[in-house]
Image (cartoon, rainbow, N blue to C red):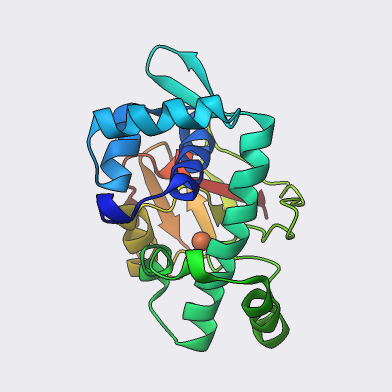
Length: 214
Ligand SMILES: [Fe+2]
């Protein structure tokens, strides 16, 4: 994403994703994702704080307020439906959808969204995240963040909450999609039901992906 075309909605989406990943968004993280510099991020964060959308958790760490969360979810509706359109309508690559949707999501009117939903269904985005309604309400997905690795366990991929190109490409290459079964060996390794060998997961994999019991 280019720094010049970034707006408030992109900031809210970015902070939302980092909150799912690690509980907060740091200035440098946001700058990296949005392709801008730390000072620009700080200036925009101040505006969002004045609007009551963002709060400071501690020095350099930010989160969405309740109002900010609602606004983020309204935007995520556009983003996730744009992904569905690119995927089901245009047959684009699963790992490119998040990035490509950034080019069209701001122009997704409710009329377009309703047509996409009618044609392709829009319960979830291709990465397994529920599509909020137009008021920003969303049904919480009851899945698990794995943080303890006592013994190998078989799980099903539920969704990708942090859609970084690295994680999406890795999952696509190894055919790990929402609904795929895998064996979690430890905090660094998994065994895919469709693949032969043990796979080393990228950094942040277990923070970025949620699972369901088999
Ligand atoms: Fe997605």
